[in-house]
Image 1 (cartoon, rainbow, N blue to C red):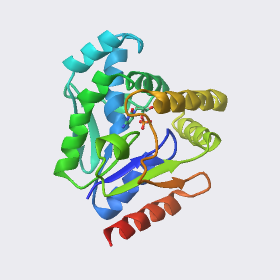
Image 2: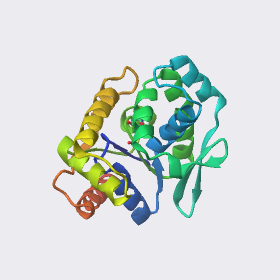
Image 3: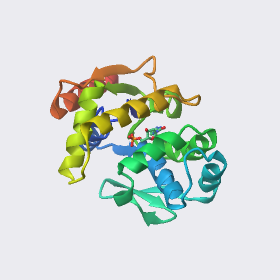
Amino acid sequence: MNIAIDGPAGAGKSTIAKKVASDIGYVYVDTGAIYRTLALACIRKGITADDERNVCDICKNTKVDIKYVDGEQIMLLDGENVNAYIRSEDVSRMTSSISVYKEVREQLIDLQRYIAEKENVIMDGRDIGTFVLPNAEVKVYLNASVETRAKRRYLEQKDKGVECSLEDIEKDIKERDYRDMHRDIAPLRKADDAVEVDTSYMTIDEVVMKIKDIIKEKAE
Ligand code: DC
């Protein structure tokens, strides 16, 4: 059985999906991290997001891979573990910008489908229920207000000791939402058969329980 969780930045997808996966013994696949790894490769090569030809060149000539160590997803960029470098706001912005390109999406989709074929997965992203795994048995669309999502990101960054402003994060999130929802290929949208869950006023445990209920219902 495969479970698809889609939704905008900061809706809580990764936190929730990771917990549910560990509770029910599924493999958690964070597809944002796959796109982020390629974005990091572009930043390291000094390529700007609007330089489609060079972004696509990097895509062809770079090996993005995943391995799992004790249940943790490790992103490999040409064999190097880059988990520590793919979460910055710079990488977030670059990722959203390069993920509009057709070649980028085509190149990275095989890896996602390959893992889902081999394992029972909970996969989170933007186009999992609509495009990557259209036949997933369970589809959830996690949502929350922009204000809530910005505040969560802000607290997360502060926790890590990163200087940031709430207004900048909110502006960034709005821009990413717009880009992710309005791109030509596989834009972020709720699949027709997905259950929408608004997490704005829910605790993590409440959302985890809700998702497990949805899975249980489907399994019956
Ligand atoms: O889930 P995340 O915030 O780590 O994703 C970062 C960016 O990657 C997001 O703004 C859009 C892109 N992305 C995508 O286009 N498709 C996916 N399945 C996952 C992420």
